Amino acid sequence: MGNLGPTELIIIAVVIILLFGAKKLPDMARSLGKSAKIFKAETKGLRDSSDDDAGVQQQPAQQPVQQLPPAQPQVQQPVQQPQVAQPIEQTSQNKANN
Image (cartoon, rainbow, N blue to C red):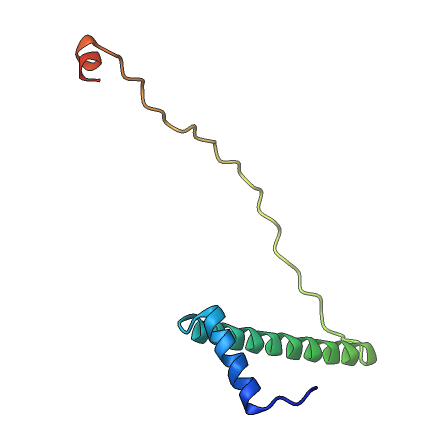
């Protein structure tokens, strides 16, 4: 049941091309490759950070605490109202054109 021969693979390829179209397949493969690359980088980053966390637990860091500069007070900006055009008055000449 798990053995796929060359004829079955050709049939599957033809069905995929018919379903998605030949123009979209390269784009789909490219985006799948980019997604796999990003996923691999993220999982590597998680493994590295978990290794770093294990090292921090074994050896406590004795680095000085960095002080942040004092926060600047926030000044509220006045809210500007949107400008609206004045309504056009209907004159007898405008009414005749409509």
